[in-house]
Image 1 (cartoon, rainbow, N blue to C red):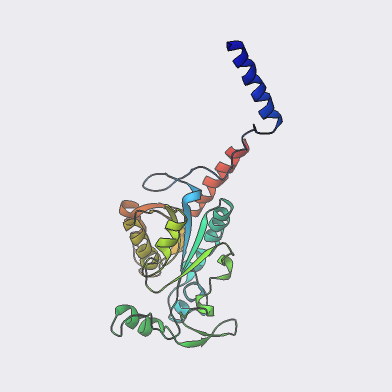
Image 2: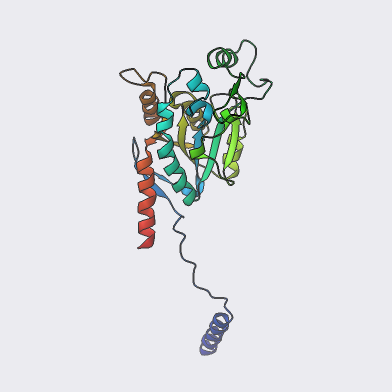
Length: 271
């Protein structure tokens, strides 16, 4: 009886093999699995499948000649310096299958979302930055300062979005305030947020704080962002914000370490 059972099992195995029901396991996806990123206060392992790169306000009004900051006499050299390393990060992130999310500060044409008449958000943006003013953009187009769907709120050409990327307008410093950012991150199962953009101490840090309050794990790439406020002080606001994150809100790394982590992962996958 026992020998009959053994013979039947052998026959079943051969039939299954010949019919293609038993197949070799597919090769492992080199994109899958965690990547360890060297950072402060300690290295952090991130899963690309659950990671998004957040690009904060890298638009013409903040980072281009003739934009809002430049017209207001605010130094944009730091923002422009951050463009090249950010481009490298986005290229590697896309190759690794990460989500790319652009946050863009921009208001409706009637300024109805700028805030109440006496709100700080409204009064400072109007008085200091001239939001809503009509200008001629460097490319010759008629434009308005920090108004949606104009030259000023276009992402700088070097970092332009791709069809699969997500673009979210915001009206306050935090990207979570009255936007779909949180719902979008949850929809895609995102846990880790890689931050780039401007400015470090205002829109980036505001968004990081709100992300941390919602239990996202935030990593700031310090050479992919800048802060003009206090940039002439012995210790800049940029450095102060990074210290806040390192101590309390998340992790701080840089583009070199980000690229290195994925380069090493690809090398291991090829061995």
